[in-house]
Amino acid sequence: MAKHDFRSTCSIARTLELVGDKWTLLIVRDLMWHGKRTFQALQDSAEGVPSNILSERLRRLAKWGLVRRDAYQQRPARYAYHLTEQGKSLEPVLLEIMAWGHQYLGGGRYDPKSGKSWKPGVGP
Amino acid sequence: MAKHDFRSTCSIARTLELVGDKWTLLIVRDLMWHGKRTFQALQDSAEGVPSNILSERLRRLAKWGLVRRDAYQQRPARYAYHLTEQGKSLEPVLLEIMAWGHQYLGGGRYDPKSGKSWKPGVGP
DNA sequence: TATGGTAACTTTCAAATTGAAAGTTACCAT
DNA sequence: ATGGTAACTTTCAATTTGAAAGTTACCATA
Image (cartoon, rainbow over all chains, first blue to last red; front, top):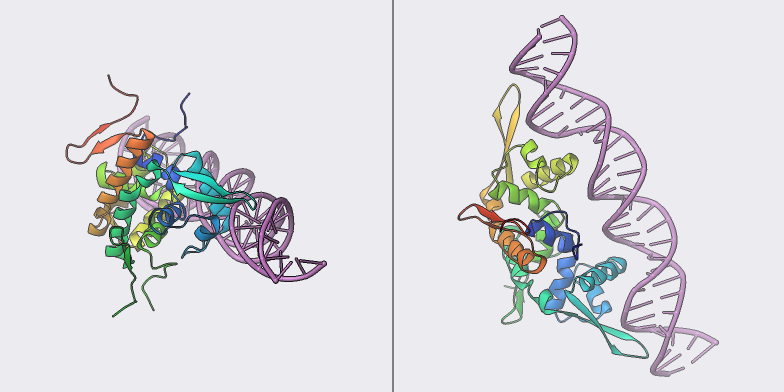
């Protein structure tokens, strides 16, 4: 009995079972690059993820070991979300997707080294 | 008035509007690496994409200029699907996703250079 | 000419997922 | 007591998915 039941042996198909939707990688992006740690911070993402979706995706990412949920204070209970090493290892995937979206869809850029970002239609 | 209406300026968000689902990148994979050209061939993919989904996704990819649909014969009408240059430019994205799925989910590998693939649980 | 087969879809419809909004629980502050 | 915040959960209508059957057009064979 395997740990997980995949629909295919294909690495791409397997990865898409985890992150193949419109929100999951945006949540990973915010955790990876934008210092978002709390449910509220993540919910205030640029795209406005619905709270039920955010809740479900965080649960899924945690279940797969890409995200850890830590109570950083009791009373009132507050939680912080962090990427695990496995979660952080998605960075090259995000970078390639970003590069493609920048080149072909005119989307913005973010440079993890400098922390600087460029948005289309803004600036000189 | 822009060509397309995106929900965000983020390159990742924009890219996910196009390929952020469980099937689209598998179709791109089959066109990119596995020589699938016809609707039937694509439908016989390892994962078994439903024909209505395949139809809709091909239409979308064509609309965005990633795929071209050519009639390669009349009577009976037969069509071939090909990736455009823009579609082919997704290869690095596929490769990164594949690498991640191989390392963390134990999925198979495909080497575009040699055309050889390795599947988990098969072989010596 | 009738029967069967293939390709490329489209249609149907029940089930699953999504998303907007409101609700819940627990706590702190005034 | 009243109000505010964080972290969710619940509700429910609308959208999307997916399994299956149906459609259209053509060719092949008996």
